[in-house]
Length: 105
Image (cartoon, rainbow, N blue to C red):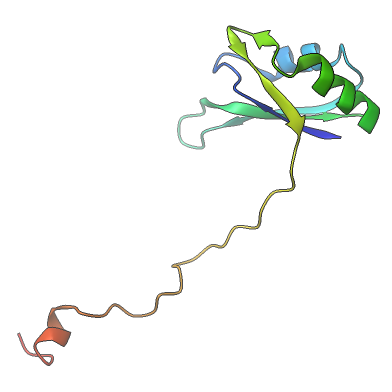
């Protein structure tokens, strides 16, 4: 079961979360989400537990628990929404200088 862990301190790392969540069951993977440019934590992570029972136990045990000075939020992760990449599909620009003057400047 994949869990979303929010409101984590910027100092909380994957080892700390793995140790914490292992108290509720077998942890398969921990991933702290970081900023692509700075490498700094974005304040949330994903923890994958071995099974649904361990995930539900972790939610019950840890949601709202204070870790590193912050009350963390733990719930089941939702599937990632598909992102659309590209220019937004608005087509050519309109109303530019050339259009306003019939193509003359």
